[in-house]
Image 1 (cartoon, rainbow, N blue to C red):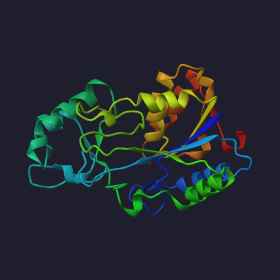
Image 2 (image 1 turned 45 degrees about the horizontal axis):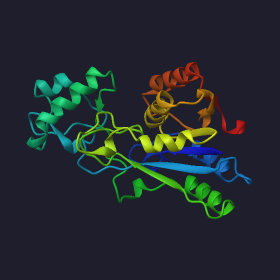
Image 3 (image 1 turned 90 degrees about the vertical axis):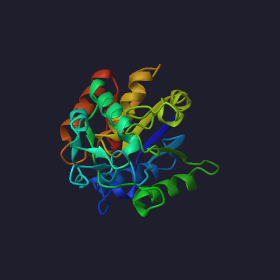
Amino acid sequence: MSAFIIIDPQCDFHPGGSLAIPTAGEDAARIKDLLSKSPSPFSEVYVTLDSHHKYDVAHPGYWVDGEGNNPSPFTLINYEDVVEGKWTPTNEVNKEWALTYTKALKDQGSFTLCVWPEHCLIGSSGHNVDATVQAGLTAWLLNNPGKEIKWVLKGQNTKTEMYSCMKAEVPVEDDDATKFNTSLMAEFEAYDKLYVAGQAQSHCVNFTVRDISANYKKEQSLINVLEDCMSNVPGFEEAGSKFILDMKAEGCGIINAGDV
């Protein structure tokens, strides 16, 4: 048995979306072709969905400077910025958490908090699956009667980023959904092979695969990263390249759609 894990194939990450990746449409076409194969190489299909509220720690409206201005998209906010008052939460209740959160990111060597354009807002068109990928999912369902897509939502907690579908960047104590998803990990380990694609290589695919690999009890070679079915957020190519090199060094398969 094998599982195809498609990370965040949503409209906001595709051309025309609020956080569009220029080549995501080409990735989507290859993902669709894989999903449309009959017989399918995949026993099950998982789709993760980035799912945010408007007020979110990584959205502009969460933060304000001394003059009352929200940060521009792609502004980086580090612990020192919060300590010095360069950026403070618009809701004063979150001031202590802002310090705790940015310090935790710094201490664990994570990405510095990046303020993204509002994206994948729950209930919005940008939260929907890209039409090309959706067509592939429909084809897979038609070719596999009785099966269902396994949907995995992430990012609903406004206090923490959640690039990985396995856990948030900084888990929130009273929200188990931000902690490591042991049940999902057990599901993944039940398959003979895992194939991973989606958006973005530099962020959500990167962090998801790292978390799976770090907790995987089988041979890493059973985890296959489909390199031509994902792209980097522009400006983060170095992170995406490092991810591929690191996973290759760990023994994961780095393959293309044509190899499936």
